[in-house]
Image (tube, rainbow, N blue to C red; front, side, top):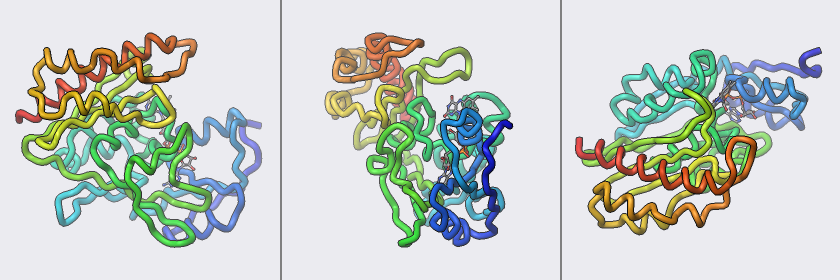
Length: 283
Ligand SMILES: Cc1cc2nc3c(=O)[nH]c(=O)nc-3n(C[C@H](O)[C@H](O)[C@H](O)COP(=O)(O)OP(=O)(O)OC[C@H]3O[C@@H](n4cnc5c(N)ncnc54)[C@H](O)[C@@H]3O)c2cc1C
C-alpha cells in the first residue's frame, strides 16, 4: 500500500477548514500535495486527517489592496502567479521566480501557502518574501493574526502556522518607483533544487538581502545591507561589500556541497542578486 490509511475531509468554507484542523490531533491541511503526499509516501509523516483546501475559492484569489499591495490567497499556484496581470503589475519578480520552480506539473499544483508553510530551506519563495517585506495572515481557533516574514519562518519545516492554524493569505507591498527585486541562485541542474540562493530588493531606503539554503530560515544578510547603506550600487562597490560575508554563515555540508563551498556561493549569488535588483531599480 502506497499510503497509510488516512481520513479525508474537503471543507466548503474557511471556517469549516479551521474547525476541522482544530478538532483532530494530527490533522494537516492538504494544498498542492507536492511535498505532503511525498512525505506521506515515504512515511516521514502520517497525518490522521487530511483537510483538503481545494474547494476554498477565497484562498485561490489574487487581488490588490487599497494601497496597491498584492494579496495572494494561500492556494494560489505557481502557474497562477506566472499568469496573473496583478502580479505582473505589482511585483513581477514573483512570476519570474515561480516560472523557474521545478517543472510544469509542480508549477500547476504547488501553492504559495504550501511553499512557505513547508519552509524547506531550498524553497524559492521564503527568501523572496523575506526581502519584499511580506506579511502572513493566519486564521486559528483564537481568531486571525498577521505576522511579518521575520516572525513567520522559524526553522526547517517550522513556521508560525501552528497546530489547528490555516495560512489564508500573503500580502506583499507593491514595488514603488525607483525600486527593484531580483533572485539569483545556483541550482542542481536546470530548474533544479537550489544549493544556495539569494533574493535582493533595492529601494531608495536601502538594500535588503536574504540568503536561502544556509540555515533553517531565510538568512538576512544584515552585514551586507549595512555595508551597502548609502553606497552607490556599482559592480566594484557591491563586489567589495560581499567579500567575507560567507564567513559569518553556518551552512550545512551534504552530498551536493560542503559548507565552505556554500559560503563562497553565498557571496557570489548575493553579488549577482544585488546588482540585478539595482539594475531593475533604474527602471
Ligand atoms: C519534483 C519536485 C521538485 C521541487 N522543487 C522545488 C524547488 O526547486 N523549489 C521550491 O520552492 N519548491 C520545490 N518543490 C516543492 C513544491 O514547491 C511544493 O509545492 C511546496 O513545497 C509545497 O506546496 P504544496 O502546495 O504542494 O503543499 P502541500 O504539499 O500540500 O503541503 C505542504 C505542507 O504545508 C502545509 N500547508 C499547505 N498549505 C497550508 C495552509 N494554507 N495553511 C496551513 N498549512 C498549509 C501542509 O499541511 C503541509 O504540511 C518541488 C516539488 C517537487 C515534487
